[in-house]
Image (tube, rainbow, N blue to C red; front, side, top):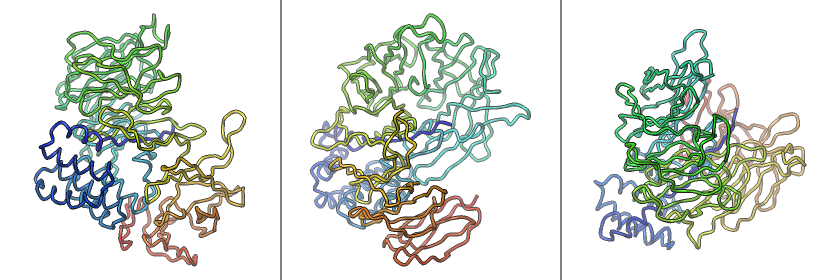
Length: 585
């Protein structure tokens, strides 16, 4: 099964700054000026009273108030003020449906040492990756099994599973390509029997509601099509754009009505689509007027035969009028287009910069390119776009390789160009990333050295990467037979990490790694995937086996049982260390 990583590049603040420059007298402009004062000029002290006054004056405007509350938390966090935690909690409590609630949860998780926080949401969501994210950035859907979807609420971290097959006895049913509706309440998907779509019409387009105990509804069962790849919902959620395969394996862009499944064909793309569906998936502009997609520049003479691998980005009016417009050309691969929230440009992945894949942007007006493509981020690898939220967070996926995956930090201005004067590190190759409490370092794992074939069968090693200097430091225990496993847990002082190490027999133990001296000190034989460090850095809380929750004194090694909750599969420690929340199911 494919293992993947999901990442997000947070672009929202810079997009806000770009927009408000045009209207200096609006509330949006006022908030943008305060954000600029704090996060560009670094004047966090002066910004705090300005944020509070802005909140008092604009409390009825939920979108702006949520944004101001969030950035007030950022200011507190940068100053090391404990009010940051409370401020982020207020965002999640008072504005759960606003896009910044997701960012508040991530920030709060980094403050309390949550083990699932990665690099701006660059953490593993599932072994099969994520398929789509809602426009507000709150819900993410992925295939959890051959018959179930899972929808994760990125604010509350709740997971809902939807059984998306009819469970016909003796019939192998399989689901593919789930796509969330704009409000995150419905999923449309391709349903197939026997896992071998063919000209016999054994696929259907189905839709299922997020409501508990919902049953799938057949939207289209039409032998004219053999595979359905949902691409995009209309803004009103009344129709779905689908890449539909015909028996001769040619593909068409078709609108299907959610009311009765009636089709409205837009354009035949013949055999011009190829590869992972997400890399060529059509995407609709924010105003709903245009569709962008990646396709081969030369139509093959028959299915599966490529006369050329050159792939361009095209734009077509969503009502099907007019012809497709070639907005990104070149003798190279251009794929995975995604619209920026303002609809004025497209991000896409391309190897046009000399062979290596990077993230590029092209400015558009009325569906036509107004400038040459601009490089946004080099050397990203062949990532695949998942979606762009309204707040400007770009979600993408990169396949898990034998030497790890790539983790990125990228700052963009309103024109999608990397900001000058801000250090942007090169890609880090590794896995299990964890931010340090101050946000200046990343702990991650990777094998120390590959073999001659470029594959790595050496043990995983702990690395610490500085986001300020770009320096990377390796930490190896004196006993070289130990392998680092699982994500690191940072101590809140940022001077050491707790790292699970495994010996050749598979036995695991917990070591405290001093990041200055490099010393590995055995702390406990009790290692667990579900674990936390208390806010005073004195207690390790873990859930090993048998439903036990155990607290270990990190100075003395003394263990004590604090609870017994059989069958629990999730726990979280409250910020004040007084309450443990568990999920039993």
